[in-house]
Length: 252
Image (cartoon, rainbow, N blue to C red; front, top):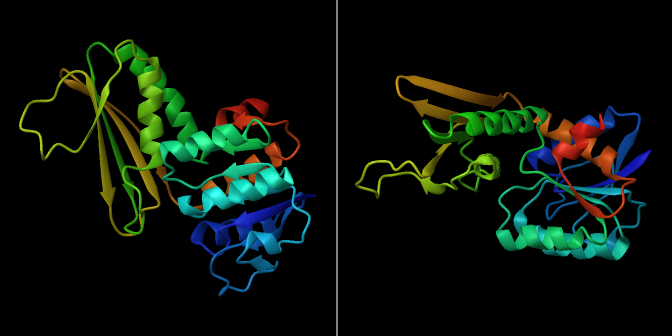
């Protein structure tokens, strides 16, 4: 049995993972950590990491980027593997995860969905083939409560595309301030926020007289919870290192 500390347990994703873990025979949430303790959970919830007494095998974090520093101190001190599923991290915070991975196993992915990671592999292949004659645009849509824009997934898609291109592209976020035609050396990235959209990412390859579009739509938050729990199972017995969804997929 893998014992999980659910960081951000009282948030929307924390509650999704709580329900999914309750249906599992191989893992359980042993304790929760959240700045709010107003929700009753089937495990103890702490508002301070210092008070946690339960045996923890893996931490799953679906909270807020501001919580990362304290969480890393706790994980490194206790030598506990960390599944980082929180989005909107700064480059400095990503670097801190990379540094921590020299001492503990760290699983970090911009998106915990298997389907999104498959989309990334597909668009990399398309970008290699279409580079010389197609413009590339990324459009992401999320609910009106999402704080970061563009999404971490949209940026991960752009980075993946750029990694396979011979000519590296500039990222252009919206174009209302630009009074000039689109150049061939850019990837447009656009964010839509509205309603209760769980997550939608489209990559558009626009050429002369033809358009290729690769799209992924999340119908519920459950797919991210399933991915995070699979990552926890995968990570709990690993050596220190930085792991991602590609490692998980390759192991199955």
